[in-house]
Each structure stands twice: as C-alpha cells, then as structure tokens.
Image 1 (cartoon, rainbow, N blue to C red):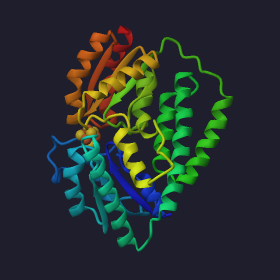
Image 2 (cartoon, rainbow, N blue to C red):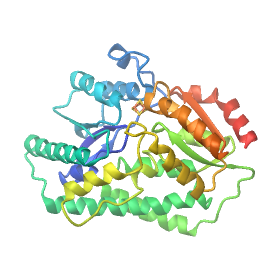
Image 3 (cartoon, helix red, strand yellow):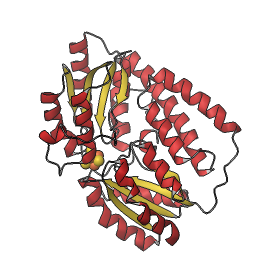
Image 4 (spheres, helix red, strand yellow):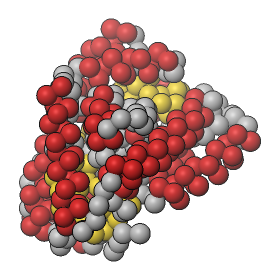
Length: 345
Ligand code: SF4
C-alpha cells in the first residue's frame, strides 16, 4: 500500500484520515548515525537537531512508497521547516496541518476546519473519496491499536517488558500498515501474557519525558546504566495511545477533540499543565526519579526544564535534565551523569 509520510513532533496527526484515504500513515523517524550536512545548507546549525536530521533523510531519499507528506504543527521548527521541505523534497503532495497551540473551543473549531481541508486536498489530489463510514472504520481500528498498546505498556511496570522493547513496538506500529500492526500487537500480547517478570537488581524506576526520542538504542543505553523506564509521556509512548477516539457521532469532530484533549505537549498553551500530567504519572507509577531529555536546541523542552526542576524539587522527586546531541557517539559522553543520578536515587 502507498504511504503518506508524517512529519510531526507531537503525534497530533489524525492517522484515521490517512487510513480512510486508503494509504498507510508512516511516521518519519531520524537516523542518529548520520550528519545533517545537506540540511545544514538550508537551516542554521542552532536549529533542532532532530528536525535537521529528518530533512537530511528526506533530501537523500524517502521510502519509495511515500506519495505525500503531512507536516503537523508540533512546534515552530516543524512549521518553518515545512517551507524548506517544499523546496527540497521531490513530492507533489505536501500538506501543513495546523494543530492549534490552544485547547479551547475556538482552537477545536480551527482544528476541525483544518482537518476538513486536509481531507479535501487528499481527495482532490489523489481523486479519492474519504467517506464517513471509512473514517469510522479507521477510528475503530486505531482504537483497537491504542487499547493493545495500553495493555503492553502496563507490562513495563510489571517488569515483563523492558522500556526499550516497548519503545521499539510503538515505533513499528507508527510505520506499519495498521492491519499488520494489529496482528503484530496481538502476537506480542499473547507472548507477553506467558512471560515471567525479569529480575533486574538495583534498577531505578523512571518516568521518561522531554523531546520525542526516536532512537530505541538510546532507551537501551539508559537501561544499561541501571534504569527501567516504567512510564513516559512521549509521542513514541503514552501520548500515542493514552485515550480512545469516541466512535459515535461526527468522526472529524471526535478526532479533533481527541487530539485537543490528550495530555499536553510542551509546545501547547498553557505549557505548565504538563507538570500536572507528569505528577499524576509519577504518583501512579511510584517512580524513583524523572529523566527529562531535550534534543539539542529543542526550545519547547528547554523552556519546560526550570519549571519542572522546581516543581519536582518541591515534591521531593529526583529529577535529571539532559540536553543531548542526536548522535550515538554523543550518548556515551552522558554515562557519568546518568550513573551519578542512578547512585543518588
Ligand atoms: S525535538 Fe523539540 S524543537 Fe525539535 S521538533 Fe521536537 S519539539 Fe520541536
């Protein structure tokens, strides 16, 4: 099946629309083993490392089945880069979906209008029809996926699945055809129901937050230093499946409401509400500490850091903040800080 590539830092892209258009939604991830040399010709090197990396991959070559791109306004980096993608990436269909910063009724109407415009442009460009029935079917399918991911996510807390294995599963689901994803998740669930908890001595239970981390190797690396990520609030994580989309009523409205109401991303207003989400997770999962990772030059997460540091201090919850370059070599330089944090908590 042909794919629509998703360039999104906040998982606000309504995949149901793409499924109803009979394409596979295919989230784009970076590659931390390459340098963004060509992207640096278009974007200053003080711009988010992750989005520069994605642009580099897109300039070099996208997956051959991708016939279009939707860029969803996760943060202003995705916004400004969209213009550059239109100049540098050889695809006829590119849509900028303006996911609103606010979460009130005006924002909801604005988002519904823009999703409807996305539908119209897909229909016009690809000569297809996205019907209400197809949208409802797609919502059902995505809800099944969300429910399976919620069950699998809980196995992290029970020490049945590692945070890195779980991360790899969510990543796969964000790129697979959704029928294949459902099969894949079913077989994982069967396997996990039979597994025994692993014994891991002296590990620390962590809530992971920050920029969207798409390198599973990085999660594996953190674990190797004595941590188990029992919960997160990331886009390749709980933000992707925390709730269901309502199945009755107007499908576009239900999809927009789902995205507006899901746990708040750093880039949205008022951003301090993020702390309430993190506090709830920290209590519910009885964590030993919080790790907040910002990709280098990720302004939304950098702005969050002083507030989160202060609030977690007030709660007496150990908190580690790290700003890191998107490169596997760079991870190794962080081992002293991670190890010191593991010893401290
Ligand atoms: S890492 Fe930060 S700056 Fe980069 S796209 Fe994501 S939210 Fe935006």
